Structure formats: C-alpha cells, structure tokens
Image (cartoon, rainbow, N blue to C red):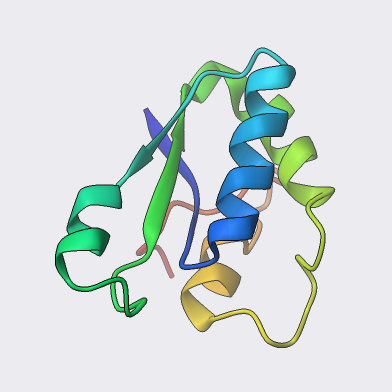
Length: 95
C-alpha cells in the first residue's frame, strides 16, 4: 500500500473514502486510533492508503475533492499532493 494523502480534516476523509470505495478503489485510513488517543486535537494527521496499482484512479478522485486547492490546507497536505515528474504525488518525505 502507498499513501495517497494525509489530513486532519474529517470531512475530507469521509468524502474521499466514500468516493474511492464507490469507484472500486480499495483504501484504508491509517492512524485513526492514534489520532483519537491524542485527544482529537488534530496533532496527528490520518493517512489514506491505497493499492499502488490503483494510484491513477485514486489521484483523479483526490483532485476532485472540494477545497483541495484552498490556501487553508496544512503544509503536510500540500507536501503530500506535490506531483513528481510523472504527474503522480511524490511519496511523503521525498524532496
């Protein structure tokens, strides 16, 4: 599995998982329980993980997400959505 995005936005998580599943893209949200344990103050973003072979379909769905280009998004989300030279998101932690 690879990371599609990470976010603290519960509305985006709900929207994204619904649309991924509706399109037949298998996804799992990581760090949900860790986020709850820290008190749900938003310090630990949740990661949406997908199968690598479904990356292109998942990326198209993510691009349609409401508010994805909003200047109010956190820097970790902006980093997770930076595209590499193939037009796909860079893995988190790559320059």
